[in-house]
Length: 185
Image 1 (spheres, rainbow, N blue to C red):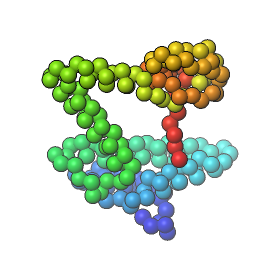
Image 2: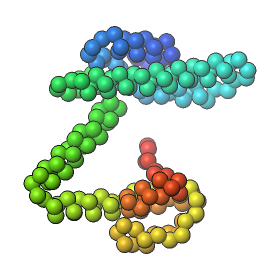
Image 3: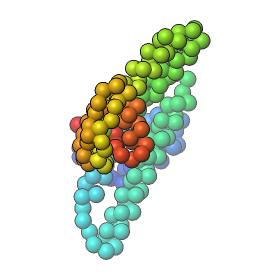
């Protein structure tokens, strides 16, 4: 898929169909997800009236569903491999797998510490996790809080952004008082 062959709904459907028909992970152009993102983004920007707008909305829904299907099929294939093969994975897929590897490592760390009687290590890990900081955006006003690290934070107004301990952030997020900020370039 070169620059002269931009992604469209037909190409996306063809790629998804090919991915379902073969057992191995197919080779896709390294810029595929970015080109697909451009296609969907440009489609969203277009404004139409009447039936043309309904067609655009249907096309967007198809593109969204095909994209989710493709990612899930490729990740499912990866999960069924005995040995991880990176040659046909795109950088975005490697990004997803990186977090899964981190989860496996953390699971093994907790298991090993638990069965080897390393309670001090587990206590330290727990405390460090509670007090690690998270960036949040406040959805409503809130008075000053005392963080898991025993520091004072706030008060905060709606739309304020702050870095607070993880445990406090999770409590506020679960109550819809704040939302986690994900930094994107």
